[in-house]
Amino acid sequence: MKFEIILLVALNIALGQCFLFNKANGKWNDLKVTWGINPFNSKNFQSLPRTEAEAVSLGWTKEKNCSQVNGNRYIFNNDNAVLLIFDVRGIIAGIATSIPKGLPFNYPSNKIQPLFNDEGEFYTLSAYFIEPSSVCSGQVARQLTGDRLIIKGNQKELRVPMEQQNLSGFWTQGKCFYTMGLHVWADIEGNQIDENTPEENFSPIFLLYNSGKLNGFGFAFNADLPSKRFEHPDKNVLNMFFRRTPLFYKDANKTGKLSTLHIYLDKTPRLNFC
Ligand SMILES: *[C@@H]1O[C@H](CO)[C@@H](O)[C@H](O)[C@H]1NC(C)=O
Ligand SMILES: *[C@@H]1O[C@H](CO)[C@@H](O)[C@H](O)[C@H]1NC(C)=O
Ligand SMILES: *[C@@H]1O[C@H](CO)[C@@H](O)[C@H](O)[C@H]1NC(C)=O
Image (tube, rainbow, N blue to C red; front, top):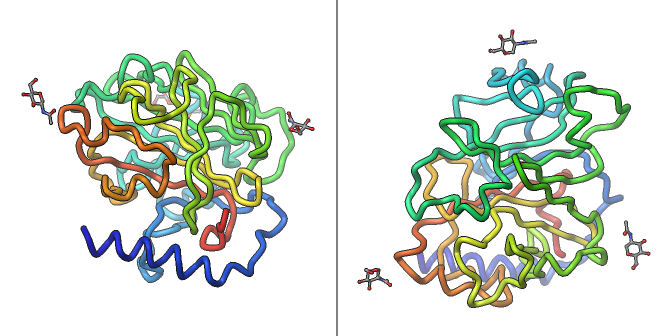
């Protein structure tokens, strides 16, 4: 664990030294998941298919369709850490994660459950890159990957500002981490995240801004989920992502191993220098 922390710190210092790049035009031209240090591990920063045809050709299978959920959803190797949501024309419309019911610490709490869809066996957290209402009606002509970020559950919707300067007080700005971005967090009741944030209020969504623009986001679950897609940040490095780290992360009665997923919307996440 110590070794990983030293690597993280070293990586941030090293990358800071060669801070010469500018992010390209800010267009969302990719969809990658999972942060990792090792550049040779193909699971890190892996690009996902953005058309249904490509998904099928790569072995993804249809999990649910527009008659059951908001989109035609695809799954790979039965791993519901990453579900791809395609619109009726077969173009990427969003991404989702399903987590099992009955997790420790009553996760997800009653307070954050409205952000999820209750799908019987699972709670599903869905992020859309187009208007959720157009996913199954397909009336909107558009380019890959989409141009907005909307988290929509059974009873709650979060519309995310494309520009950092437009963040409302609902969001709490955290810290910059190179190869990720400026992290932005949320308390589901709109309070600023600080030491006293209750675990049940902690939103499972975070945002990533680089050069002031949203080019990524992520899911953060207070749960130990098995998929290799997930990252499992050590509790000792959380202060690299928060300005004021919630204390519940030190309470073994409220939290265990964490599972996070960084989701990148452009081709060059390694050049994310905030
Ligand atoms: C959608 O899924 C349902 C249930 O599996 C199935 O009965 C239906 O034929 C599917 N529709 C399409 C268009 O694939
Ligand atoms: C974002 O903030 C800028 C500066 O305050 C403002 O001019 C712009 O209209 C805002 N954009 C949106 C979409 O609210
Ligand atoms: C967890 O809760 C038990 C029972 O309430 C208590 O005895 C214990 O000290 C708590 N542990 C921590 C780390 O707070």
